[in-house]
Image (cartoon, rainbow over all chains, first blue to last red; front, side, top):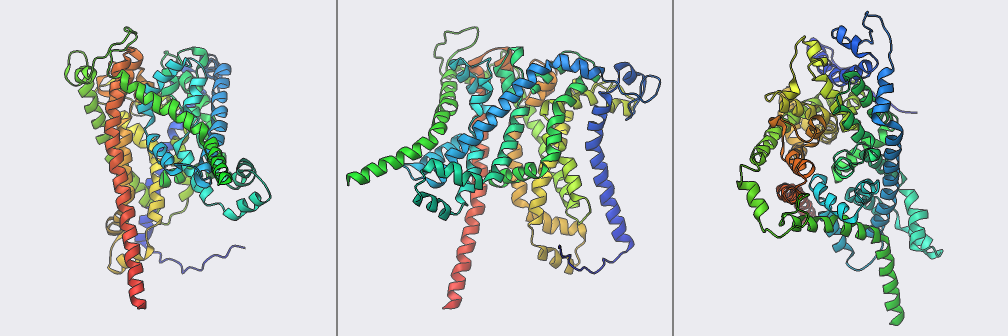
Length: 291
Length: 312
């Protein structure tokens, strides 16, 4: 049972009430500025272009006569315009492959840096840590040149291979591994387990919460990544959800259809956020404090 | 002795096997691209000229001085600075205020934090489409005010609008970090200030703000670093060849040279110039972080020494 601390009731006076009211008014006002755009996007995507243009400002799904009605035609049009089947498949392949490779390869390297002993370990760690901090925007052109040289532009490989390692993930996982009790590993070693077995069977399960956090953030990052896929893949059949939506909004579709497209692309991640909020917010904090 | 060497060899082999993927990745997708880009920035390689020759620093000099060919180079840097001027202070002040409000023992703190965080998990392209339509001549904002302004294609409003989107979009993330910094401030400091008769605003100014100074510096430096890289939003909203000159930032120009002109050598030179700028700020950031760490270590040593002295 939770024990609540006993508190003397706060003095209630006019000034406190006014202050609290003021704070709530400001915060709720700000909150509305965050909710209304999303709400407007959702509602407008469910109206016909004609209905949208013939009524003034409203946050209700009204048709042109002013009656409530839901119209799903925009979604049908957006489905086709986005080439949703193919594009969704591409996005999932990229996100899933990237997330698994990221978690496996980064944790492997992080474990080596945390626990194994080998020649020039700390020097290698420092060199890689520093040089991989070059921001992605700077790497756009160089990475394009290397992918062009390797002949993997205009393929899904170009969306996976340049991102399979992440210096932040290695850094955070190494911190986690350093915190694991050495005694458990020692016991396993005496039992005759090799380093890979110890890493996979014993240490990795102990840092599962961090793996989940990094898995989610890696997946979400790949899902929304835009500039790189846009620069490296020209073939329309290789578009991801993000690049396909950008293409849609640049091609003169109705406002309502564009918003339907935006809902289709953004909704999955927002829903995931509400379900896995704890992990996502936790991951943000870890990244900000330590990264 | 031989057995020892063998064991040493085995141990090293295991370690390197674990980091082998990282090493390969590092060489192929970090080292090689950087070297190739550097070399290409000293040549005249482009889609129009696939047989490049060495031109020395010509690309850099042309970029900096040839106003006829690269008329947007300096103005794009100016646009980038203007964008930072619009976003960094606004974002900082707003973050401080909202965090302080959330930190004043109110109900629903978690609810507000969640709502403010939604843009951070919205796919950036979708968020830009949403804003683009809200600001369109027939969009939400114009409907509310019964006006007909093309905010995003107007030279005087376009950049302000994009800055506004960035501040709005980043608020949730910033508040999350700022709030946790505020919660780490020693509560006795507030009590002491109250004893001295400080009001809410004075407490904010003399206790909260100094208490979160490291976080403010962190936001300042990261804000500048990410400010230099702004351009994605513009590419999404306007495509790669817009006539709206006031939104053509440095990275936008770099992208333009890459995608529209296929001028690989100039794009590489621009990447390296950007890299140099960001490197300077990153080093400043490291310096600040290290200065903090060193100060802390010194303080700990001093306390230990004093404790030892007292014992004696």
